[in-house]
Image (tube, rainbow over all chains, first blue to last red; front, side, top):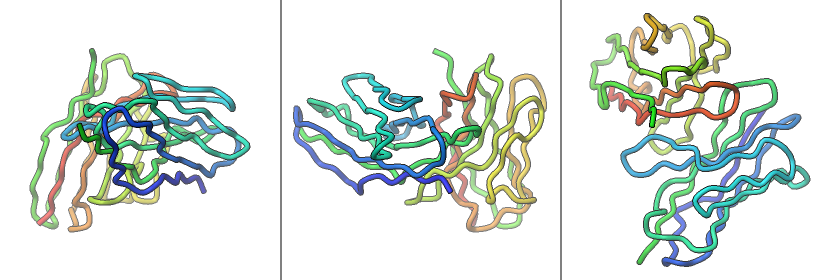
Length: 112
Length: 112
Protein backbone atom coordinates (compact mmCIF):
# COMPACT_ATOMS: atom_id res chain seq x y z
CA UNK A 1 0.00 0.00 0.00
CA UNK A 2 0.89 3.65 0.02
CA UNK A 3 2.90 5.06 2.89
CA UNK A 4 4.98 8.04 3.97
CA UNK A 5 7.87 7.95 6.40
CA UNK A 6 9.18 11.07 8.11
CA UNK A 7 12.01 11.64 10.49
CA UNK A 8 11.10 11.53 14.15
CA UNK A 9 10.87 14.76 16.06
CA UNK A 10 11.09 17.00 17.80
CA UNK A 11 13.67 18.91 15.83
CA UNK A 12 15.08 21.78 17.85
CA UNK A 13 17.04 24.50 16.08
CA UNK A 14 18.31 27.97 16.80
CA UNK A 15 16.97 30.88 14.80
CA UNK A 16 18.66 31.24 11.39
CA UNK A 17 19.79 27.60 11.34
CA UNK A 18 19.37 25.38 8.28
CA UNK A 19 16.44 22.98 8.35
CA UNK A 20 16.04 19.58 6.73
CA UNK A 21 13.13 17.26 7.46
CA UNK A 22 13.44 13.97 5.65
CA UNK A 23 10.50 12.33 3.95
CA UNK A 24 10.38 9.15 1.87
CA UNK A 25 7.38 7.49 0.35
CA UNK A 26 6.09 4.23 -1.04
CA UNK A 27 3.52 4.35 -3.81
CA UNK A 28 2.90 2.88 -7.21
CA UNK A 29 3.05 5.09 -10.24
CA UNK A 30 3.49 8.82 -9.87
CA UNK A 31 1.92 10.24 -6.74
CA UNK A 32 1.56 13.94 -6.01
CA UNK A 33 3.59 15.01 -2.99
CA UNK A 34 2.80 17.62 -0.37
CA UNK A 35 4.06 19.26 2.77
CA UNK A 36 1.43 20.49 5.20
CA UNK A 37 2.08 22.55 8.33
CA UNK A 38 0.04 22.71 11.51
CA UNK A 39 0.53 25.65 13.84
CA UNK A 40 -0.66 25.28 17.45
CA UNK A 41 -4.45 25.27 17.69
CA UNK A 42 -4.95 25.43 13.95
CA UNK A 43 -5.78 23.07 11.10
CA UNK A 44 -3.46 21.70 8.45
CA UNK A 45 -2.27 24.23 5.89
CA UNK A 46 -0.68 23.38 2.58
CA UNK A 47 2.92 24.56 2.58
CA UNK A 48 4.05 23.33 -0.84
CA UNK A 49 3.50 20.62 -3.41
CA UNK A 50 5.04 18.85 -6.37
CA UNK A 51 3.16 16.77 -8.88
CA UNK A 52 5.84 15.18 -11.02
CA UNK A 53 9.41 13.97 -10.81
CA UNK A 54 12.10 16.68 -10.45
CA UNK A 55 9.49 19.34 -9.67
CA UNK A 56 10.49 21.69 -6.88
CA UNK A 57 7.79 23.06 -4.62
CA UNK A 58 8.53 26.25 -2.73
CA UNK A 59 6.76 28.64 -0.40
CA UNK A 60 7.76 31.02 2.41
CA UNK A 61 11.43 30.09 2.02
CA UNK A 62 10.72 26.34 2.26
CA UNK A 63 11.61 24.03 -0.62
CA UNK A 64 11.24 20.37 -1.48
CA UNK A 65 12.19 18.48 -4.65
CA UNK A 66 10.32 15.41 -5.92
CA UNK A 67 13.00 12.73 -6.32
CA UNK A 68 11.58 9.70 -8.06
CA UNK A 69 14.85 7.78 -8.01
CA UNK A 70 15.12 7.97 -4.22
CA UNK A 71 11.35 8.21 -3.56
CA UNK A 72 12.00 11.26 -1.40
CA UNK A 73 10.58 14.73 -0.84
CA UNK A 74 12.78 16.31 1.82
CA UNK A 75 11.78 19.70 3.22
CA UNK A 76 14.47 22.37 3.52
CA UNK A 77 14.76 25.97 4.63
CA UNK A 78 17.94 27.99 4.67
CA UNK A 79 17.22 30.11 7.74
CA UNK A 80 14.43 29.22 10.16
CA UNK A 81 12.56 31.70 12.32
CA UNK A 82 10.81 31.29 15.66
CA UNK A 83 7.52 31.66 13.80
CA UNK A 84 8.29 28.46 11.85
CA UNK A 85 7.75 26.42 15.02
CA UNK A 86 4.98 23.97 14.11
CA UNK A 87 4.33 20.37 13.14
CA UNK A 88 5.20 19.50 9.53
CA UNK A 89 3.49 16.66 7.69
CA UNK A 90 4.67 15.04 4.49
CA UNK A 91 1.85 13.52 2.45
CA UNK A 92 0.99 11.99 -0.90
CA UNK A 93 -1.98 11.41 -3.13
CA UNK A 94 -1.55 8.22 -5.11
CA UNK A 95 -2.21 8.19 -8.82
CA UNK A 96 -5.91 7.80 -9.55
CA UNK A 97 -6.98 8.48 -5.97
CA UNK A 98 -8.04 11.45 -3.87
CA UNK A 99 -7.10 10.44 -0.34
CA UNK A 100 -4.09 12.06 1.28
CA UNK A 101 -1.73 9.60 2.97
CA UNK A 102 0.20 11.36 5.72
CA UNK A 103 3.46 10.77 7.49
CA UNK A 104 3.53 10.87 11.27
CA UNK A 105 4.51 14.54 11.43
CA UNK A 106 7.69 16.22 12.67
CA UNK A 107 7.55 18.86 15.37
CA UNK A 108 9.95 21.75 14.78
CA UNK A 109 10.92 24.00 17.66
CA UNK A 110 12.95 27.09 16.83
CA UNK A 111 14.60 28.88 19.70
CA UNK A 112 15.55 32.57 19.62
CA UNK B 1 -9.53 34.28 2.25
CA UNK B 2 -12.10 31.48 2.08
CA UNK B 3 -11.78 28.81 4.71
CA UNK B 4 -13.26 25.53 5.85
CA UNK B 5 -15.26 25.92 9.05
CA UNK B 6 -15.89 23.12 11.51
CA UNK B 7 -18.27 23.06 14.46
CA UNK B 8 -18.12 22.40 17.32
CA UNK B 9 -14.46 22.77 18.16
CA UNK B 10 -14.84 20.25 20.99
CA UNK B 11 -17.55 17.64 21.39
CA UNK B 12 -17.91 15.48 24.47
CA UNK B 13 -20.22 12.48 24.34
CA UNK B 14 -21.03 9.29 26.18
CA UNK B 15 -20.11 5.94 24.72
CA UNK B 16 -22.95 4.59 22.59
CA UNK B 17 -24.34 8.00 21.72
CA UNK B 18 -24.68 9.37 18.22
CA UNK B 19 -22.66 12.42 17.24
CA UNK B 20 -22.76 14.65 14.20
CA UNK B 21 -19.73 16.70 13.27
CA UNK B 22 -20.38 19.62 11.00
CA UNK B 23 -18.33 21.30 8.33
CA UNK B 24 -18.87 24.17 5.93
CA UNK B 25 -16.50 23.64 2.99
CA UNK B 26 -15.23 26.40 0.75
CA UNK B 27 -18.18 27.46 -1.37
CA UNK B 28 -17.06 26.61 -4.90
CA UNK B 29 -15.32 23.36 -4.00
CA UNK B 30 -16.61 20.08 -5.38
CA UNK B 31 -14.80 17.44 -3.31
CA UNK B 32 -15.18 16.92 0.41
CA UNK B 33 -13.23 14.80 2.85
CA UNK B 34 -13.05 13.66 6.44
CA UNK B 35 -9.85 12.68 8.20
CA UNK B 36 -9.11 11.86 11.79
CA UNK B 37 -6.09 11.98 14.05
CA UNK B 38 -6.01 9.91 17.19
CA UNK B 39 -3.75 11.54 19.77
CA UNK B 40 -0.13 10.76 19.01
CA UNK B 41 -0.91 8.99 15.74
CA UNK B 42 -0.98 9.83 12.05
CA UNK B 43 -3.69 11.77 10.30
CA UNK B 44 -5.84 9.08 8.66
CA UNK B 45 -8.19 9.35 5.71
CA UNK B 46 -11.80 8.36 6.34
CA UNK B 47 -13.88 9.25 3.31
CA UNK B 48 -14.19 11.44 0.24
CA UNK B 49 -17.46 12.69 -1.23
CA UNK B 50 -18.26 14.02 -4.66
CA UNK B 51 -21.46 14.64 -6.57
CA UNK B 52 -23.56 13.57 -3.58
CA UNK B 53 -21.96 10.21 -3.15
CA UNK B 54 -18.97 8.59 -1.51
CA UNK B 55 -16.12 8.38 -4.00
CA UNK B 56 -13.56 6.69 -1.78
CA UNK B 57 -13.42 5.37 1.77
CA UNK B 58 -10.92 3.70 4.04
CA UNK B 59 -11.22 0.57 6.14
CA UNK B 60 -11.87 2.77 9.15
CA UNK B 61 -15.07 4.08 7.60
CA UNK B 62 -17.36 1.22 8.57
CA UNK B 63 -21.13 1.04 9.02
CA UNK B 64 -20.93 3.19 12.15
CA UNK B 65 -19.97 6.17 10.02
CA UNK B 66 -21.98 8.08 7.46
CA UNK B 67 -21.61 11.35 5.60
CA UNK B 68 -24.15 13.70 4.17
CA UNK B 69 -24.40 16.98 2.37
CA UNK B 70 -27.86 17.98 3.54
CA UNK B 71 -27.91 21.33 1.75
CA UNK B 72 -25.68 23.41 -0.49
CA UNK B 73 -23.28 24.42 2.22
CA UNK B 74 -22.91 21.84 4.99
CA UNK B 75 -21.06 18.52 5.02
CA UNK B 76 -21.56 16.27 8.02
CA UNK B 77 -19.98 13.19 9.53
CA UNK B 78 -22.23 11.04 11.71
CA UNK B 79 -21.02 8.38 14.09
CA UNK B 80 -24.01 6.25 15.06
CA UNK B 81 -22.84 4.65 18.28
CA UNK B 82 -19.61 6.09 19.55
CA UNK B 83 -16.87 3.96 21.05
CA UNK B 84 -14.00 5.02 23.26
CA UNK B 85 -11.61 4.49 20.37
CA UNK B 86 -13.48 7.07 18.29
CA UNK B 87 -11.93 9.78 20.47
CA UNK B 88 -9.80 11.81 18.09
CA UNK B 89 -9.45 15.09 16.25
CA UNK B 90 -11.65 15.02 13.14
CA UNK B 91 -10.67 17.21 10.21
CA UNK B 92 -12.87 18.21 7.33
CA UNK B 93 -11.29 19.24 4.04
CA UNK B 94 -12.47 20.39 0.64
CA UNK B 95 -10.91 20.82 -2.77
CA UNK B 96 -11.72 22.13 -6.21
CA UNK B 97 -9.84 19.34 -7.93
CA UNK B 98 -7.61 16.37 -7.14
CA UNK B 99 -4.75 18.51 -6.02
CA UNK B 100 -4.94 20.88 -3.08
CA UNK B 101 -7.12 20.08 -0.09
CA UNK B 102 -7.99 22.85 2.37
CA UNK B 103 -8.50 21.80 5.95
CA UNK B 104 -10.62 23.09 8.79
CA UNK B 105 -9.27 23.58 12.30
CA UNK B 106 -10.82 20.30 13.43
CA UNK B 107 -13.32 19.03 15.97
CA UNK B 108 -11.94 17.27 19.01
CA UNK B 109 -14.25 14.39 19.88
CA UNK B 110 -13.99 13.00 23.39
CA UNK B 111 -15.93 9.80 24.08
CA UNK B 112 -16.37 9.05 27.80
